Image 1 (tube, rainbow, N blue to C red):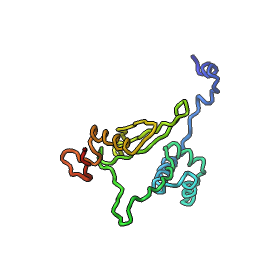
Image 2 (cartoon, one colour):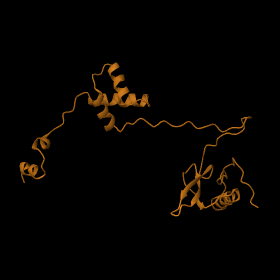
Image 3 (cartoon, rainbow, N blue to C red):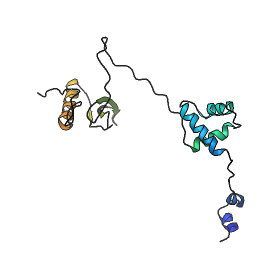
Image 4 (tube, rainbow, N blue to C red):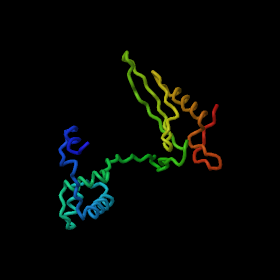
Length: 178
């Protein structure tokens, strides 16, 4: 089948079939400069990078920089909310950073409504190192005794949070089970 007939079948102009994009000679050097500036100034977007390039003597527009920016997969990261400090007045409490699985756990409650309008609350327990969820338990009403019982069940099954693996020293001691 000829190119002319194939282009007519797919309703495509023949000029787009024969088009060869012309790459500028400074494209690779410009790309390296954009990536270097983006890594140096992590919170800058392509518009501010364009201004920096113009200040350095590049004759480049924001559209070209944006095209290269997208092609290279560059993004401005979202701002992270700063974590609040955890401490007592005497400075004795420090936020634990997870070093291994079952070292630090976090739990939270999630609320949902059933089809008849009643509330269900779910207790979610998350291992901060592996991001696994060893427990999701739903109840209509949670009491402190039920929370402690659910946490104790997980400790029996997976071992205590903070319990050392074989050959490691303990950072936190497990409570004795009654």
